[in-house]
Length: 166
Image 1 (cartoon, one colour):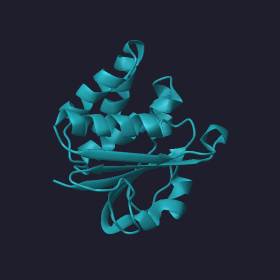
Image 2 (cartoon, helix red, strand yellow; image 1 turned 120 degrees about the vertical axis):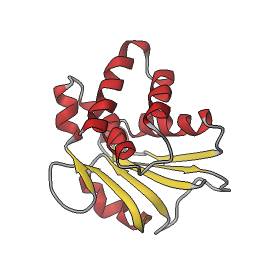
Image 3 (tube, one colour; image 1 turned 60 degrees about the horizontal axis):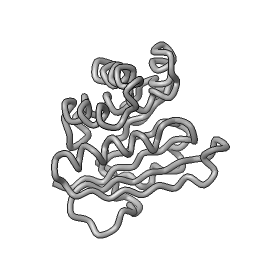
Image 4 (cartoon, helix red, strand yellow; image 1 turned 180 degrees about the vertical axis):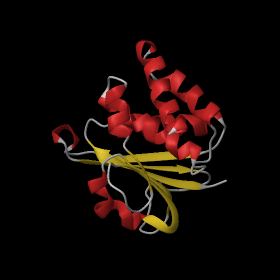
């Protein structure tokens, strides 16, 4: 089993937490996993890109046209990171617009839950529901329970389930 995943957004959207959850799922399933992130200007609202490779890979970087899955938390990043995705790759976007890929207004759902940062887990739920990722909802729930601070676990799981049920 091999899968290459990009997670793209802007600073403060939870790109790195989402990356950690997916990587933790791989670890829990005893799968090799490599991650890398670029987040130089993230604290000022700049673009954040994480790459995740699950399976036997030598490098964490994803070349143009090689990503199996793209999880975009900021739809404006589609222009910037679309080239990383395979033609047959699964594209999932947090967007209120219609267009390419599976789209969900994860930000609106997260705001209704009381925390805009939860859009990352809403998008993860959608990706799992679509069968785009190598893992199950139970795998993700276990990883969220492991990684989220205790006081936020239930809120994080609620966001994930909103994406699953969307």
